[in-house]
Image 1 (tube, helix red, strand yellow):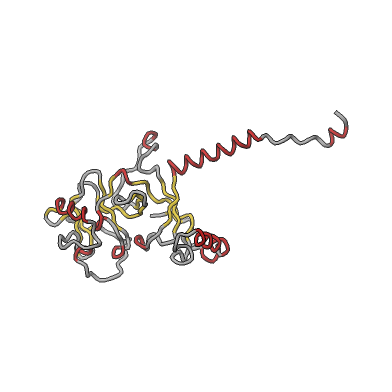
Image 2 (cartoon, rainbow, N blue to C red; image 1 turned 90 degrees about the horizontal axis):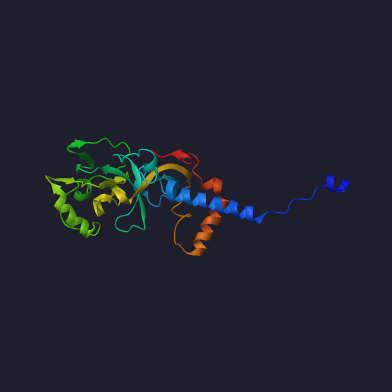
Amino acid sequence: MSAADMMHPRRRPPDWSETLQSLLATIVIAVFVITFIVQAFQIPSPSMENTLLVGDYLLVNKLCYGGIHSLLMPYQKIARGDIVVFHFPVDPKQHFVKRVIGLPGDRLRMVNKRVLINGTVIPEPYVRISRPADDAFRDDFPQLGMLTSEIRGNWWIQMHKLVEDGQLIVPDGYYFVMGDNRDNSDDSRYWGFVPRENIIGRPLLIYWSVKGADSEMTGTSSVRDRLYRYAYAVTHLFQITRWGRTLRIVQ
């Protein structure tokens, strides 16, 4: 080797196989994490206000209630008061987020907006009430009156079979869920129970929260509109971010 070569060693040509292996390993890890550990979720409606707001972006813990986690260590049981993300029973392609109110075996009823489980009023400091009692079915559930357009017909039929002494009995393997924004929530009162297998996990963290989500960040789903919203978010990142909610643990 000449003195020039020693002073200026030749660079090793890039090993494309190593680069490709590293890229594939990163993709595999990302897919594993998204499939089994966490999932990103965006709050699309005000049904969980003020706990979760439209424009909150969540990381959902998919291990807490089982999955591969249950093979390695005990998993957490679903408890009353847990916020859960689940496949909407009416249309499993949609993901909903609500709070668990009724557990299997519970006898549930509402009296003037207050929830009673097995005859006892449960404390609900998270509930938001936005209007006075004016709907017998919604505010004094279950009132078996007339079927309306807001209530699913099959649920209306099933509910009649499960109401005893004015209380709805939650069957084994199912959960009764409601939104914290109690007067503006499309929940189990209108379409029924959530099967255990539909529950994906529990929101863990609000990793980003954006204000004005109902205008700048949502709307029609055309490619042009989506590109506009993304460009708007990038150029107005500091102005639209709710910094007080970003990186907040969900409780």
